[in-house]
Image 1: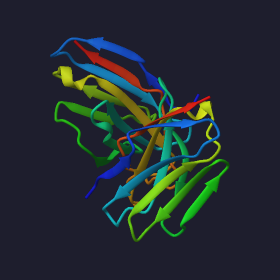
Image 2: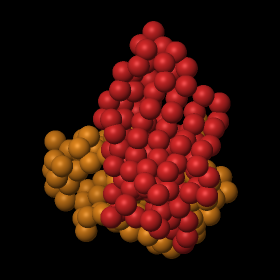
Image 3: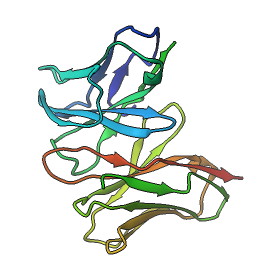
Length: 114
Length: 113
């Protein structure tokens, strides 16, 4: 157990729907990162939050949004889902805003859009 | 300029052999280079990392070699074992006010017994 908890582990939904992925960071970690892993794109950085504030943004679609709550858990919201959004979505956390010593990934949420 | 290119895409090695995975980058502002190991159904796990002020770092059977002038770095797995069979990702980031990582495309390693 890495200490980063992601729920749900699997999600199957239809095109056009909206889903919410949840991440609880490792105890004491203030930064949360979201990554998308697909077969053809590898691991793509989506967004980082640090202590409740957005810190960095990657190739995140406008249909996707995220937030970090006061208890430091984070949610990634995916709307108007398309078949191409099917992927593994990973959350990671680290103690600080930068990546001084690497960070810890959760086990991911596998999203299947049908 | 933000890309990290990784090769080979897949690798088969006999037990006891040396596995070598290579990565190249273009952005000279990158100053932190980790390697992650991922088993099926799991998230990537940090294996070993290096900063550009050293040319080599060794942890057990895993060694990173870093060539700053060539903008290349590689992972060597000595005495490869079947338990090392996994997907390996190199990555790069800039130490600063974000922890964003740019990942290579990954290498699937199979170690045959």
